[in-house]
Image (cartoon, rainbow, N blue to C red; front, side):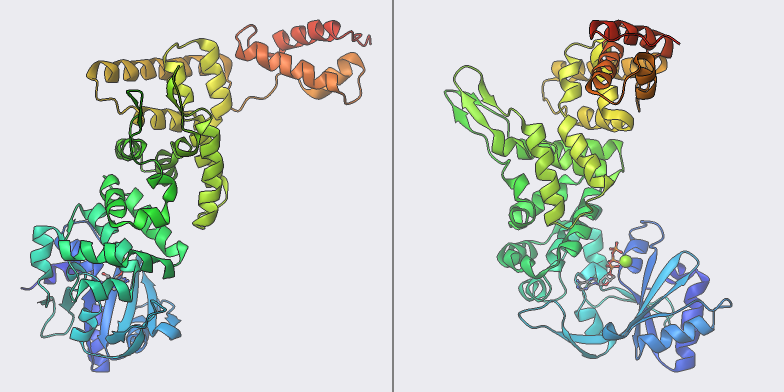
Length: 472
Ligand code: ATP
Ligand code: MG
């Protein structure tokens, strides 16, 4: 089969010509070929295999590009990278690999194209296109990757048990591709992943997180998380989630399975946002339920304080997985902490409750609403409709209250300095009390969020505290 239409981008002619100048064969391989056949749009990183030196080929290619892009050489890996327009092109010499127990970094020697295809993780990632004059665009597909693409199957070129044991990161990649592409992992592969799950320990957290994020970013993330759970990998990576599994029953009272509920919430939110961190918040919004679960005869199952517990767990989880401990983490914490607020509100939509919600959530109030709508997983169509309608009311009210009161990013309408000046005070406890009273009055809707009304209230409060107005 010839797929030269995949190679219309001018860079491929340049690579072809450069390889000819060096007298070596070159091929484009992996994700670019796969995604072209799947019509997934232009793959932004192109992998080139040279039967010879990948570094020499990269340098030759750079010479043949008018503006001479810089070549980044990774000597230890024998690879080189250059950027052409918005495309990153990686060059590697065809290689044969053999692995040791302790590390996912193999011993490497030069090899043929076939050797190089053998070391690839999946049949659908081992397809190559020729870049020589005689074979330009010819598909080289020794493991029937094309057939697996059509059948939507993830399969390893060689024995899956060895493939995953050699480089356990491939277990994460298999599940990530299954989730991204909605493919099925072939059963021998799935068994091999379960068997080798403990080997994931030799993979760095950073690499695991790259794959986790790609799973979370896929259209239906539950595909990936269910596979992680089924193979036993999730227990190692995110035990906070597996702890949510199961339904307990006492005295005829049951609670829902919070693990499957969580996955539903994540799938729901994936339809409404591409924001990775909001998706993380959906994934973690109920993790506090495992440690706070209690049963009492009177009220049945409760999870009191799970939002606070969950937000604390979020910090520890981010730290453990080496996720960023910056404003993204704080955002996820805040979403987890506030995740029950709008639901409580939707029972009874009052202006003051909405004002408080906007005050506490600040700029994240819209994200919080997206999270809480995704959280509605009831199978009762009447309730489903009712909750969504209530949230619509809440959203309308947020707009209304916002227009009137400007509570988002609240700035006190009377400053501390003004209070000090009015009563001739030095910094003191009274100032805080007055400020708090003004804020409360605004949130309760007793006074508008304006200077004049707030100043008047300040005078009243000051008097109540026995302060004397400073006459000037
Ligand atoms: P994407 O770019 O969407 O992550 P990709 O298939 O291009 O998908 P890359 O990480 O860019 O993945 O890797 C490029 C190619 O290198 C893959 O298609 C595969 O052939 C090979 N590869 C990558 N990682 C591994 C691995 N751990 N084991 C074996 N082969 C791998
Ligand atoms: Mg790629």
